[in-house]
Length: 226
Image (cartoon, rainbow, N blue to C red; front, top):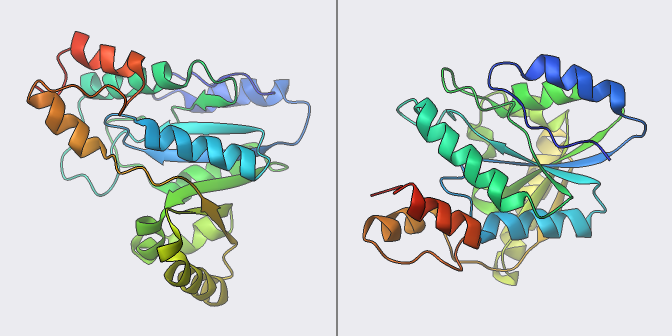
């Protein structure tokens, strides 16, 4: 198994090269990107179900430094907190790794660039990009989205059977229109959002059981979102 990727911001290329030399087998890797502000149990469950249901070797969690949909650039301090919460949340799971290739806070990160980068470094590996239903329906709005389809299989999370018909229709459309390879990922319905967690923390309310205990403790210790 590949060692955990705990990269230095702005120096991902050199570290990736070192890791590549240590690889001895082809791997199936799941990619979980997000702002993770903060990471919560819904993210972790999605990663775990993808890992087991599709026989993946590892899940990489990629905190986005400055995704295109954010109007303002994140500070390095805020990015540090998000990274640390992801690290704490996944450290007990040997199948989860932290990857900081999108953690640069000075520029926007685009999925097509990240996935192309992974393909160049690991040409023999199979990548599975994990996303939610909302993202699948908005996929054509992503920058150079066609290029993403050439680099990975999309695992689209369907939260309940009510979404089945619409999800299958969207998958069929993207497959026929762009040659996409998309699989349905069935995961538990978890009505938790990072926004709700931040709002509760701002009011001094508990966020325990919405996030791992270590993340709840970190939020309280650092007085985040207040």
